[in-house]
Image (cartoon, rainbow, N blue to C red; front, side, top):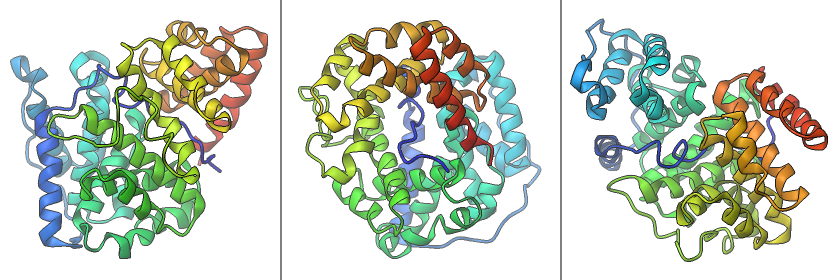
Length: 367
């Protein structure tokens, strides 16, 4: 069973490495606009057309609009697996693709819903590569197709096929977390309304997983061109976590340090100090969020991640940072090999905490 407090991908995939291009935003806006008029309308599965994908070689290799179109074409022309095969190959040699990998997988996920028509078939084709962005993109498309007028009625059933087969697994989490992203999309980044939509889910674990998607999308809205949020304050970096209801606080604090870092020039020491001001029962969660960012900001480099976590001034700060970091290592690689390397670099007490956390967390990937 996947713990409710799962640490997801570093928001923006290392804050400043990933920049969402305008074409990405325009595509999502187009989905939202069509959703308002179309309502819920899932077509049946289509077959790949076999058409050739957009060529983005040479000068166009760093043109995000071209790259986005290429991966849409690959899905529609050859299927999801071909798109992922090419993405994984490009990831090893192309820095532009590597730094934009997560949102490219969102693109693949959205295109998959268009091709396959529903959640079960789209999910059966999925891949966790680059922090599971495929599943998040798929759910964005699903929610956009349903639209704001019908989403309250249908929210509780969207992930039922996944929960029936793999309840509280990593795949189930990604489905419900993706709903949170999607709710923010169709509700125009109204955070409290989106959280209330998550509350329509009948299962507590699903509700909390959905909250995490809402809070992640709230932070993403601050950096993406063409979007904005009313629910972040540079002068109060832990807002809205300090004002939301208690049922939402854990998932809020688990995301919020990714925004807080942007307000202090990525100074981890200062964010540790900010976490000290959080309510007592959520301080450890805030420190774990710092650990996720320590891993994410270094592309899960063991040495750099350790250096960031060691900026914590006490055992509580450092140990929880390590917990957040080792989970992010596993999420990033889909493997525990690099996570163990990170753990072995630590002193005895932290090493044991790290190894035990990694062992338990990795079990959720073995479904």
